[in-house]
Image 1 (spheres, rainbow, N blue to C red):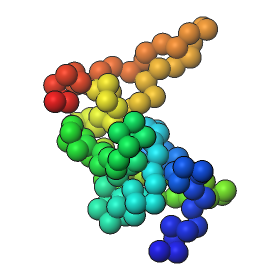
Image 2 (image 1 turned 180 degrees about the horizontal axis):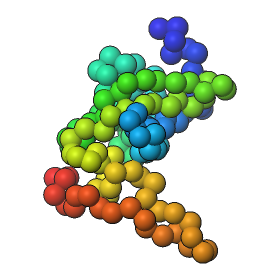
Image 3 (image 1 turned 60 degrees about the vertical axis):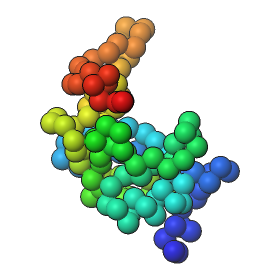
Length: 129
């Protein structure tokens, strides 16, 4: 798998991944992948990440049903960051964040503080078991 060798993996064997909504350009989330997660993402056509907190592969949406269909993978100029263009499935509008929001980037800096500017689309208590 020569294409996997082109990625500059960090000291833990991980690469940062940005998930961007293909249709709108919204940045949905940031996560990590190892070689196995990236290969599995390509094989499935759906996002599979490496969960540092769980210490295992994490198929996005395995609990919530909010999977990410992958349309395109891009490797940055230094070969150490991946941009993944996705369609967020499982809820309309798509929910990428475990807080029940469309994007994990729902706080904006305003007047010296971080303010929540995006609404909860679905109560996380009803999403996760």
